[in-house]
Length: 427
Image (cartoon, rainbow, N blue to C red; front, side, top):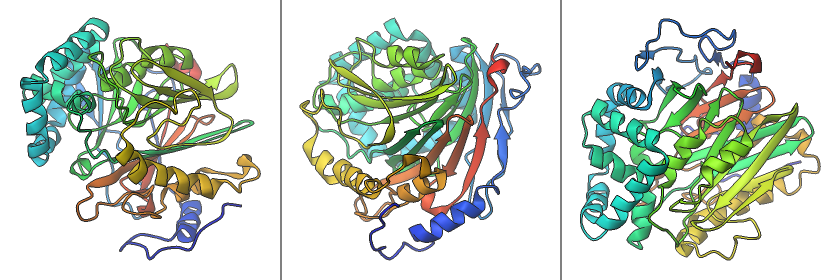
């Protein structure tokens, strides 16, 4: 039984956890299932030309939905894919630069001046090791009609902030994994600055590698930093880790993007934990391997990493929790203000669960809807000077190859479901 502390007064339009659990059960069969277009039968989108962007397949949301993430289908090489994304979501990309003008202006000023050599070394490392991702970013910039250098700066934001010794007030994310027998669930609140709150979108990409994926995206950032699911049934979520250490290697967003095309967990780990990585991060990779559910937690700093096979219930927010890395220096103020309170809230709620197999998607989403400790709660709403917001909630049922995606805060209850193709559909 999940222990539920007394509810604080909900925000206008929000629900108590008890109400949310009840509603979640009612909505479980109400959301429309949005298949990966043409994938369930193994058919290829024969009318889709390389680089051609086709809107469509926007899923029908559960009753009461306020909005859905716009969805873009695209295929082709890296530059063509990036150009299509930039053209379709150019307004969103330009808007986020405008909304965050002061913050980005300082970031760009640093990259053009005292941080220039470090920035250029990071981009050179990306060009050397993940050139396709750089080309995709270049296409995105051209398609959106924004300077390529601005897109590169945005995609190296964490490393540039670390180089300034002034990490941004990153809102962070919260993740719960349940791995028990045949059950494997991953639930994740994707938190970002409120400037992105109404600018998120989905892309469904058929890249040159042939590993197709569906990814939630931040405007101006290459896919991979937000929840994703590929056609090998690999579910991916990431968590920001504010390590003090950094180096002029490959920026983490570029490595996130590369991992989307992994064919299995081992390949995903190898792509993510690149020896020339620049900064810290955390991934959860989950899939079915040899007929059995498997999930791993991957923590990394610029020079060290640790991988844990997951079983039972596992919680991660935005600090290092695996034993070999806990001594690594992290941004202490952020850790104590935001990450540890969310981690404590979720682990306390889950501590009395005797049998993880009793937990379902509705229970995990209800936990991620908690406002305890706000504005640094698992479910984030901007308050006063605090600009952090939960921009999406993703809940994966890995054995069923399903992704339930909430547009915005999970406490508001609006979601749609997506399904990955069957294994035999993989070319």
